[in-house]
Each structure stands twice: as C-alpha cells, then as structure tokens.
Image (cartoon, rainbow, N blue to C red):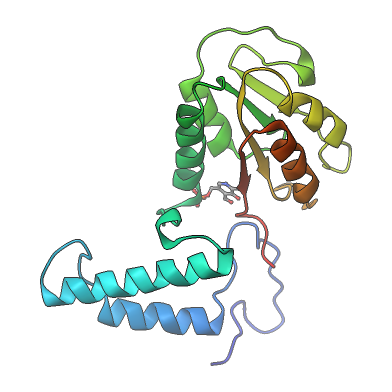
Length: 201
Ligand SMILES: Cc1ncc(COP(=O)(O)O)c(C=O)c1O
C-alpha cells in the first residue's frame, strides 16, 4: 500500500489531532467494516462475527498494554475517554478524598469533567492547595514542562483522589516527565490518569 497521506510536497504538522493510519491498521479497519458491520451486542450470525472482531481487537490492545482484556474500554472519542477517567476515578476514590491534581495544560475535557463533579469550596493555595473547584493545578515552566517538585507536593496533599497529566503539551509539543510523575503518584498512593492522545511513538 502506498503511504502518501498528505500529497507530494506537502508537510503535515497537526499530528496532535490526527495522524494518517498505518497501512496495516487501515487494512484491518477496512476488513472489519466489510466483515463486522453488524451490532456486536445482538445474537444473530453477523452480530456474533462483529463481536468476535471487537473482542479480538480488545485482546490485542490488552496484550500490547500488558493489561487484561476486561480492563480495556473503547470509546468514541478522546473526550469521552477523559470523562470516563476523571468521573470514574473521582467517584471510585470518594473515600480517599475529592481533589484532582492536574497540570496547568490539561485538555479541557479533563477540566470540564472535574468541574462537573466538584462544586464545594475548599481552601485556595495556588499550586499547593485545592481551589474552589476542588482542583489542584500544577504549573509548567516556560518550556511547558511540568514542575515535578510542585507535582510531588500536590499529590501528597491530604484529600487527593486522583491525578491527571497530559503526556505532551498541545500547544508547544513538550513531552512531560510522565514516568517521574507516575512514580510520585505511586509513592503517594494516588491513581494517575495519563491522556496519551497527543503522543505517537
Ligand atoms: C489528551 C487528550 N484528551 C482528550 C482529547 C479530546 O479528544 P477528541 O477530540 O477525540 O474528543 C484529546 C484530543 O487531542 C487529547 O489529546
């Protein structure tokens, strides 16, 4: 398959939004549209075939991520995934607290979900304390890079339920120190949601 998605001589700089499908992925998608068009939750033959294809995709993603297939959920958009992660994460951790730690450059899907669930006021203390929405925002430097010391302090604030870190800046492309941020969360016992929509490796 020839792979010339943007046309000869043209350059494409918006990979944070979408990237051309890998030829193998494109082939798999087209085959699935032919063969797995039915509603996978029905019981007739075409539907069972669709369910088979969906389950195989789920198993394949799970294997790549070293997760269990039942831990993989497909959503229709990045926004839906972020809403699930934040709403579900905060709800599931209600006993631990209600605060969300997030970088200053999270996707609006994360921020809107957080504001939806958090309405009660809390003490405000800049990057080290929750604001009135129950969010603790952690700054980034002039290169768009997360301040890890502030992050560490934030995730150790009493009442933190969840942390959220986008994997790279949408605006300037700075890749965030996700492993170090995750380590700080692990040490604090705080689950971390990482929005990977902007990182293609
Ligand atoms: C980290 C992250 N979260 C959420 C979204 C929203 O995704 P969508 O536009 O598919 O709703 C994006 C989109 O770029 C994203 O990068």
